[in-house]
Image (cartoon, rainbow over all chains, first blue to last red; front, side):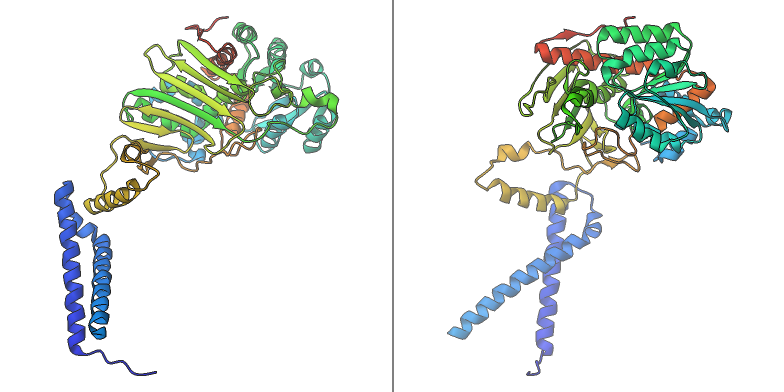
Length: 75
Length: 427
């Protein structure tokens, strides 16, 4: 089995991607709070749902990147 | 919301307010004070009718420190032998009149077929015995009046086997109803579904009617007296003691066409003077929904069987949960089998608030009795009443009304038309 090398650049890109996903999920939560007129403290109390949604965003974005990478490799 | 209370706490403390005791006056019959007054004494009891229900009481009484079983009576030898095996020291009788002559018997427990209740109860009271009669109280309204008269004109205790009278969750539920927790009472729903033929094994064909007496008009009023009789009490309690003005209904033998005479499915609607309806439905060829008793209010619903209260305006879900629900509902409503109009008519998903602990839900399989249904407390209250000689207040009236509603409901289902209910006890 071959050793895998994750570069510092790749780590930074993934951390930034995860951060953007989390931010988007928080924005979705805030949007829901405003739209459904629910208390603002849900930004904190609903953090579990926020993390799950962020994870969902991350998985979707990773899948898109994987498809783009495969597409570029074929070219 | 009332404080949660265990069954043991319930009997020993009875820490209810005046309003609750006004609605459930018989509760004081087994209060801590009454228990202390009668401590160390035993009620000497005879059981008349030692079939399944009689043996159920016998087993419970053998563990009750306030009870001593001194006599057993049955004219069906297998039942008498089975009861004797449980309590060998008790004297055996095959004629209840002989048992009533026994000076060692202070009180009797009558667990015979419904049609025998009236004569046996009247004879027992006349013989000076405190009497516990299984429900329903009587087979006809005329018998019911005669029993009430016999009790009213005598000075002995009479109690009837309506075990919900001593079931804590019903008391707690009615406290909520009368404290306004569910707003104005707008409906009462009762149903009892089973999927069995309601038959018992018969050793020989000649015993068919004696063993399966519930199935024949001569002895029973079927589902109305055996099941509805319990649930119809809910209406009286929820409506603060007011009785319905009339009942209408229908019934038939549609599945168990095995020679029985009583209906295997009934539906009855009782209307109160203020327009509120109470329904009772029973089918014994489908058990999917089991047993249910619900008080519907303008602001909430109480599920009596499960000890849960639901709000008409439950606490709103978080914004993000509402979004997810809406996405989920959107996916479902796009499915070919259902449109949006159906989706909006769904039952509330409110999880409700549990107001009673240690709730046991009877699956309806047993027609004898179920653990935690109030039977033990009720029979213990009878023992204390026999020792003290004090009649628990209101208990005969409760039995009278629940039996009368069941009997008139039965009449309505046979006539498939309206039957008026008298506004007061006739005796």
